[in-house]
Image 1 (cartoon, rainbow, N blue to C red):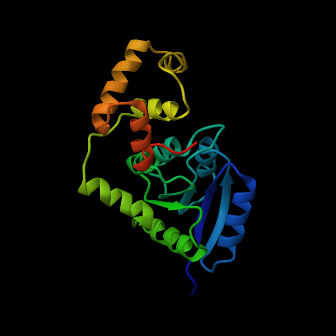
Image 2 (cartoon, rainbow, N blue to C red; image 1 turned 180 degrees about the vertical axis):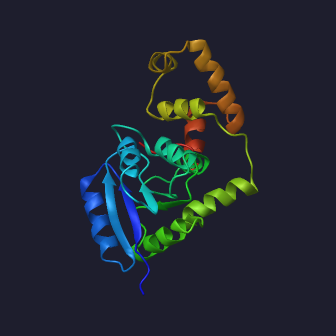
Length: 211
């Protein structure tokens, strides 16, 4: 007797992406898409009515709840395993997803057979990582460095967009003195002495994403 197919919940804000993934999985023996969601909150809602074995979660969704928050909520509630599927492989994104409880982390350019295998592994509770993601995580273990706080990463991302200290203070609703304090801490952790070097180093290490 054939085993029941893996029941997948797709979470992505792009309908075309969801349509492509649905077609791919429904064409695979032993896999079926039982629900779709365009943001994290819709995913949580779907889990209350659909019987799901694995959640395939995008990270960056412009409207509604983001993927990291949804992943944290799902894992905290004892929900099904979450496999992140995204275009981003920055250190900040990877670490946020892992800390939120994601079972795996794959990139959208992965070959179909590799993605299907990752879904099967994650559904069994096994870790499934894209090769580049695994290398980044191993690199962190081999060369531990002072971790930047979420606020420091946010400031770095805004620095990369060319914002001045005054613009940063307005964007983040903090004083310029606080901005300067954050910059001192950032420079110290990255072992640099100016904002250009901080941005370059952060991009090289994958701490922030190119804009």
